[in-house]
Amino acid sequence: MDMDALKRQAAARALEEVRDGMKLGLGTGSTAKHFVELLGEKVRTGLKVVGVPTSEVTRADAIRCGVPLTTLDDIDHLDLTVDGADEIDPALNLIKGGGGALLREKIVAAASDRMIVIADESKWVEVLGRFPLPVEVIPFGLAATRAAMDRAFAQSGASGEMVIRQGKDGHAFVTDGGHWIIDAHLGRIGDAPRLAALLSVIPGVVEHGLFIGLGTSAVLAGAQGIRVVERR
Ligand SMILES: O=C[C@H](O)[C@H](O)[C@H](O)COP(=O)(O)O
Image: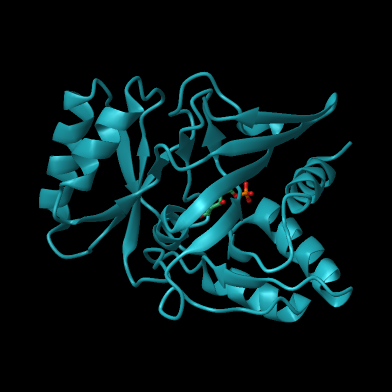
C-alpha cells in the first residue's frame, strides 16, 4: 500500500472521534489534508462542526471541501485538533513544522482539549531529531539568534548545522506569520523537553517545532494495519 493511502487511513480513523457540534483544529500537511477532505464529506452528509485552520493552505482546502470555519479570535477553545507530524516519539512528543506551519499549529493545539496526531508508521521514532528541527525566527538579529540557539543545543546535549529554509524561488521561505525558518540538523535530541524550554526563552525565536505534552493520542497507519497510541 502506498504512503498516501496509509495517511488517508490514519485520517479516517481520527474522523471516527469527531462528534456533532465539535469545534476542531485543522492541521496542515499532506496527512492533515486527507482529514480535511474526509471531514468535508461528512459535513456534506449533515455533520455539524466548525474548524480553525492552522495555515492559509488548510484554510483554502477547508473552504474547497465545504468545512465551516471560525477563528481563535471568535472562540477561545477547541474540542479536538487533528494534525500530522514529522516525527513522533513514544512519549508522543513531536517534531512539527516541515511544512512551515508550526506556529499556528501550536497555538491551535494548545487551545484544544485533545490533539490526535495522524501519520504513517514511518514517522514513529525512538528518539526525536533525525528530521531537522524547524525553528521559526524573526529575521532581525539573526546571527545573535543563531548563536543563542547554538548555546541552547549545547546545553541540552545536542549540536548540528542550522540552515535557513529556502522557498521554491530560492529566497528565504516566509511563514504565514511573516517569519523565517531555521532547520536545525541535530540528528538526535536526547532531552526534547529541556531543548524546548531553552529555545522558548530566546527573544528572536518566535516558536519551535518541538510539541511537548500536546499530543494526546497518535493514529499510526502501517502495512500491518492501524495502531492507536495514547499518551501515558
Ligand atoms: O508544518 C507542517 C506540519 O507540521 C505538518 O503537519 C508536518 O510537516 C507533517 O506533514 P505531512 O503530513 O505532510 O508529512
